[in-house]
Each structure stands twice: as C-alpha cells, then as structure tokens.
Amino acid sequence: MSRWNPNIISTPENIKPDFEFDLKGEVCPYTFVKSKLALEMLDASQVLQVVVDNDESATNVPKSMTNEGHTVLGCERVNDTDWKLTFRKK
Image 1 (cartoon, one colour):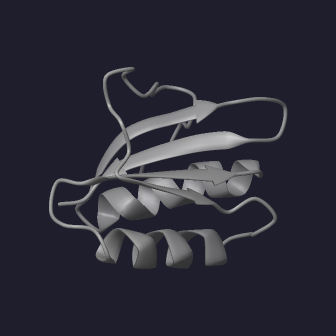
Image 2 (image 1 turned 120 degrees about the horizontal axis):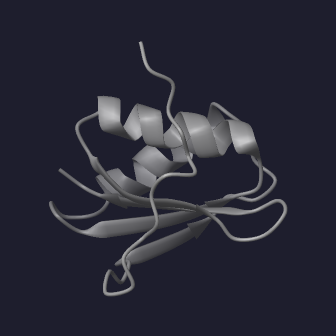
C-alpha cells in the first residue's frame, strides 16, 4: 500500500473554496471527522478548504477523504506548521 505524500499536490489558483474551515490545534482523528462533517453540509462538487497545523493530519485527512470517494484538489504547506487541504465533494 502506498503512503500518501502531502507534498505533491498544489491547489490550482482558479479553485475557490465554497467553505473554509480552520482546524489548527486539532489532531487526528478529529481533523478528519470535523472535515468530513463540514463536507457533508456541502452540495455535490462544492469545494472545502481546511487548514491544519500538524503533519499527521496533512497526511491522514487527504488519504481518508480519498477513501471516502472525495477528490483531493490540494495539499500544500503554507508555513512551518500549517497545511492547506482542499477537497471537492463527490
């Protein structure tokens, strides 16, 4: 099984999120659960952008969203601690 590499996807600049969610200070599995709940409130094909501040969440949340059938549009490091994760709801 391949390991998710959060450094490989940069969000295209023309993608604007329909909802933004700041999850700094949260850890796995809460970052995934809260991201999933936020995504459930959106309509199909809408975009959610989540900010997390730990590498574990930057790795696990995109992998879990992919497993749920959603599309990972971006996973990029913003600074030394923060990651911006972008998803399109299936």
